[in-house]
Image (tube, rainbow, N blue to C red; front, side):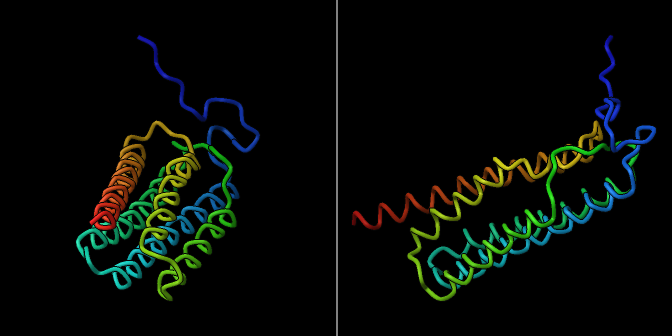
Amino acid sequence: MMVEAHPCSRVRPTLRGGRVEQRDLERTLATFGTLSEFELALADMYRACALRWPRDPTCWEKLIEAEEGHAGSVKRLAGLVASRSLDFCPGRPLTSAAVERQVDYVHHRTHEYTEGLVSERQALLAIRDLEHSILESHFFELVHSPDQDYAALVATILDETKDHVAVIDKRLEILAQDARG
């Protein structure tokens, strides 16, 4: 039976004895903090959508709850990394600044929705693109680890994000049917 090598067993300049250096750990935890803020910004954006387009409050409520849950999950991911740092090694480079730009974008979109500057269809298309970008950005490859708790939380967030895309697609379909009469 082959034993899979721990991802940190590869030679990496930031590792000392298989452990993430303190500066890398601090940077990673800061990025997770910003990712949690991003999830809360998404929840606020969906809240603005619910107020602007109240026809289907259940749709928005589910999205709000999920994003708030994601924020908590991201905090748990950070806690796992902090408490089990021997089990993690640096992964995809991602800085808090890069995530902050996404947070700013979400705040901008939220303002547009609050002020009624775009139609519901335009908002849904932008939201769908945003949810797709989350899936494609690989945010959660910040670290590598065989830790099953970490993997399970990431899988849940990604699966729920895929569900968000499906919810938005369904809402777009309903809007198209309504437009056809």
